[in-house]
Length: 138
Ligand code: DQA
Image (cartoon, rainbow, N blue to C red; front, side):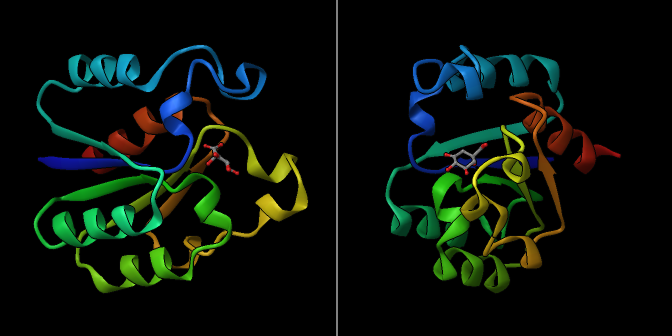
């Protein structure tokens, strides 16, 4: 099974950024752990701070991969374009968030993506990604 993880803006700073909210582990380290915990899955990782690059990646893998695990970060709350990209592809998408966006500022309660994805996993820290991968297996 081939799965693509896509992380949006500022998630390259995990481990450094707002540790009280996002924890102290960087994502490259977590990705290595995911690869060793899910050895049978062909896992790919892409991160960009640029909205169009996230859309390009969704289009690139979205007709071929078995699934996409997407944390669009701040673009979750603003991007009609990423929502449309999800609607345009055939691979199922799971939206994930590290923090519980519903317990934070009101602008984080709105997602332009949720209506178009297979499911949403919110608030389990980096474990949100593990749960998303497991959901494809089950
Ligand atoms: C986030 C939540 C977003 O509101 C925020 O802009 C992020 C990260 C999360 O994973 O908790 O950058 O997507």
